[in-house]
Image 1: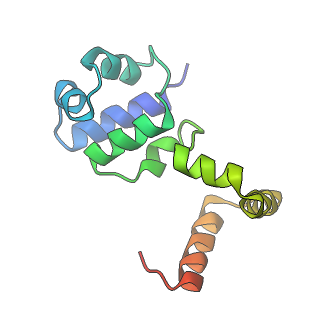
Image 2 (image 1 turned 90 degrees about the horizontal axis):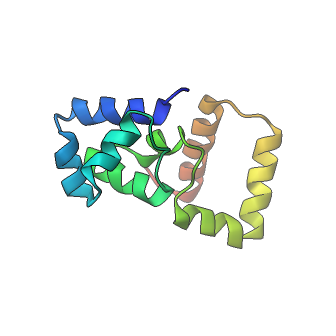
Amino acid sequence: MENAFGNALRERRREVGMSQRELADRTKLDFSYISKMENGRLPPPAADTIVQICRVLEIPSDQLLALTGKLPSNVQQTITNKESAQAFLREAQEFGLSDDEWKKMIRSLRGLMGRKR
């Protein structure tokens, strides 16, 4: 069974020179839980926990969330509660956008809203 999330988590943790115990301490998670996730013995955690882990590892949460198919609760709530957000995503989905096309849409949206990042 493929363990893309666990492998990516381990790789990033090692890149920043952090032990499993240190990551556990900084995220308030159990050390054995992190070990089991990295080794594919447990499924990825809830989206909000992934966001917390990504903050500690100093990477955008999208990097690990995309490997799990999960959305943070605040994003999910926005989509769930806004009819227009659902319609927008449905329209975008019908185009079958590539990852590069999604990134282009993000840049366009930021330009439209006058935001840079």
